[in-house]
Length: 221
Image 1 (tube, helix red, strand yellow):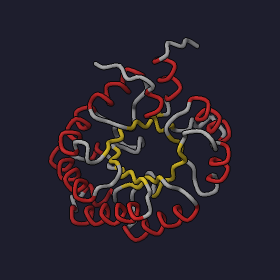
Image 2 (cartoon, helix red, strand yellow; image 1 turned 90 degrees about the vertical axis):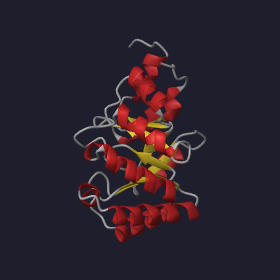
Image 3 (cartoon, helix red, strand yellow; image 1 turned 60 degrees about the vertical axis):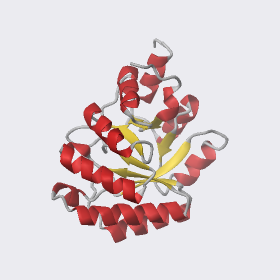
Image 4 (spheres, one colour; image 1 turned 90 degrees about the horizontal axis):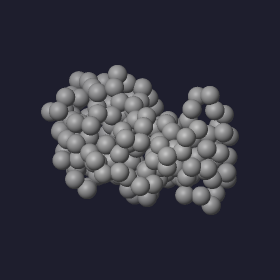
């Protein structure tokens, strides 16, 4: 397995529940992670603190439930764009996923992708692959090839399972380099992180970013 250098630059860092938001920002800046997440009220604080760094301040919509309709999500994306977010994660409607309502899911992904593309926003669409067999996941990836979101994210990290290597490999075999893949949920070590990048993920979501960084650089605490 290929060892990935500077893997921290691929990590969307998830806040440790024990940390204050200020501590979260301090750690993200210190370790130069790819991205952190903020809500509307935290956006200004985060952007000011991270000014001059490479860390992206991303927003999120309907997380982790995935119960909103397309129109509600679009309104949420519009509001976050107005505030200043230029990367937003939105989750597929989970009722539609569970009931294989592909026409609805295609409309949702299309409208969110068009909205973001027209405004130069990176959009990551969360799937919850633990609810999808290979047939369903293939269909969703084929829809993504038509809609062209920036990225498909495997999981919220709150579901029954997080990222799975076999499913990431399947996604990559369909998406190629047309749509990025974010593997998220259950990635706790440098070895696991490298495995998912080798399987095809371009972005990783993890709350263990510091541990992964230390393992790559052989730092023992």
